[in-house]
Amino acid sequence: MKLNLLSCDAQRPDKRAIAKCISEVSLSIGESLANELTEILLEGDAVDIEVDDKNSGSALRALRKLDIDYEIIE
Image 1 (tube, rainbow, N blue to C red):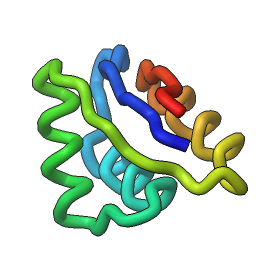
Image 2: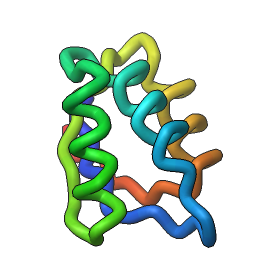
Image 3: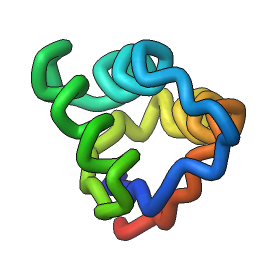
Image 4: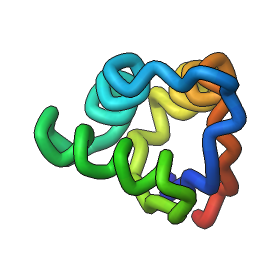
């Protein structure tokens, strides 16, 4: 499943937690790329990631917990 991460609405976003979440739920994103994508997301630009269909429910819950708005592409 492909997700488009749109924005983070948390008052004080936890960059480490967001980067860790992205690297754990995505199929092929490592820690350093997750850090870069977190910075891009927090600057206000959308980020595309791909999530394993088996883990999609827990991935979406984790993103909601971090106040990350997303849309499902596929």
